Structure formats: C-alpha cells, structure tokens
Length: 384
Image (tube, rainbow, N blue to C red; front, side, top):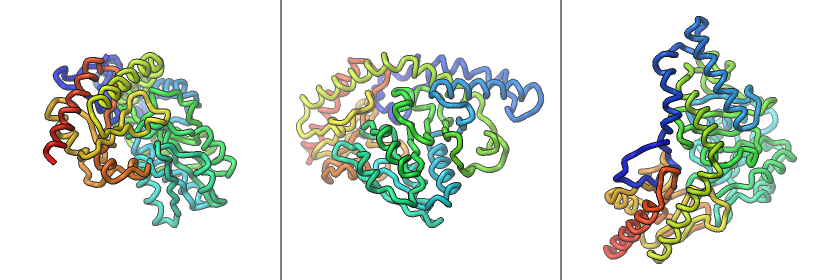
C-alpha cells in the first residue's frame, strides 16, 4: 500500500510513484541494524553482501535473465549512460554508427550524442503519427558499421508501446546490438515483450525507492565501465553499494509484477474514463498516441489554444498534479521533442499535457480531475 495527501490528486505517476509501505518495511533494517558496507570482509559487511546477492537473484528471476547480467546503478539515467556509452565504446572495432529513436528519453539521446566527440555518427529514426518507431524505419537506417541501436520499450510521454521484438530481429540480423530503455514499462509489462542486449529500469517508477536502478547487460556483450573508483558490481560499476535501496528495488519489482494484471486493468479503466470525460467536456483536445498500444497509465493530451505550462500551473493551483512531459525536462522552455517528432503542429506541441494514473487513484479522482481540467482550459481560452 501507499499513501499521499488525500486533498490533492496526483496524476504524475510517469514521473515518480509513491513508495509502497511494504517495500519501505523491507528496506528499514538495512538503514539501521544491517548497516555494514557490502564490500567489507567482516561479518557486518557479509550480512549486507548476502542481502545484495539475494536482491540480485530476485531481480534476475523476475525478469528472466542470469544474475550475472544484473548491474545495480543509481537509476535509469546512469543505466542508460552505461549501456549507450559502455557498449558503444567497448565495441568501436565493430563500427562507430549509432541509431537512436527520436522519441527517446534525454538520458539516451544525450548519451548517444555525447559520443560524437569520439568520432561516432548518430542517426535519428522518426516515429509515425502515433509515436511508434516502425521496424522497417530502423532497418532502413542500419549500416554495416552500425554498432548500437537504441529504442525504448514505451514512451515516457505518450505511453506508446514500441515493437521491440520486430526491431530486435532486424538489428541482430545486421550484426548490431539493441539497447532498450524499459524505465516506463518495468513493473507494468512483461520483460519478454522487449528482447534486447541490454536495458535500463528505475525503481521509483514502480513504487520502489528513488536513486536506484538496474542496467541489464546480456552475457557476452562487451562494455566499458562508466563509473570508476572501486571494485563494486564485479569491477564494472564503482561506488558504495546502496543496500537498502537495492533491497527495496527487488521487493518493489517482485510485487509490481505479481499484481500487474489486476493493477493494469484498474489503472487503464481510470485513464479511459478520464479521457472520455475530458473529450466530452472540452473541444479541440487530441489524445496523443490514441491509435497505438499504450501503457495503461498514460494519457498525453494536446489542448488546442492553450500553453501546456499554463495548464499544468493552473491545475496545480486547483490541487491536480500533472506535467508537460519528462520530469527531468519540466520547466524547460523548449517544446516536447516527442510530440515534435510525431509531426504535430506547433500549437498542439505547445499545448501538450501528460496525465499518468496509478493504483492509488480512484474513479472519483479521475472524474474530478477531468472537470477541473475543463474549467482550466475554458478560463485560458476566454483570456485569449
């Protein structure tokens, strides 16, 4: 279970989710009683190290891979940096061409473009109008010197689920590696839907703690460390092990996967009723990615004649939390690169607002939020 302020409506679960109380309970002893450094050789360290081993095994079982393929990180951003930079740099002898989808999280996009100073060439693959990267578009961009392709499992703004299996087949046939940012889909969708040579997840997206994630690197894939300074994580990711957070990540992932079918059905019903209500109350609203398979939680809307930043601000004043896109990009004055890549008009890009539901929300909150949004949109339009 989780809890947050009942007088507010939190519809920004794509940015972060509240920590599950059972996950917190599982973590608590590792802040106090089992406080040893997992790298220390004495009994205090061994106790923490045993917890680390159990957590790694739990994560591996949950996602269906070998424990040795699991590397704990500080979150999704570090995991994406490790995968994009680490794999590309370690395999430069295979080529220096990288393909990245244009709808990726900034952690992926900026990691890829940072490699240009080492002589790498980056090709962006554009999505269709529903925000889906088509396998044939990736295949067309592949070259003999392509070393890595990066396509996310599901978009963090629209929630559009990507055809990773079909993309993976084409990438491997060309002799390249596929990196998949699974931060948004983890805990909601099975990992077998997204075969890849490596992927990233972050615990706070599925009711786990902030500041901890996983980079999965398939056995046999070479990669260079990106965090130096210690022998932790088999010498490939330096830094003192965050035992409490890792224990919490493993517990949260296990719980979310065990309950995903029930939670997905409930959350998608909230999202669908919210969208239906908004479309009845407001004219000039576009549901972005509506024709694509979407995550059950995401509802990304472009509201004609409105600035998304203003909508979010006024919603907040009315007690409704939403966003204009990725949390790491909120407050930026640049338009959504995702909506721009989808080919939306300048007005619709500017009017983008993301709502994302969680298991804590209620039908009453969904209906109330829709009516508050309608009031906000009406007030903005009247002021123009």
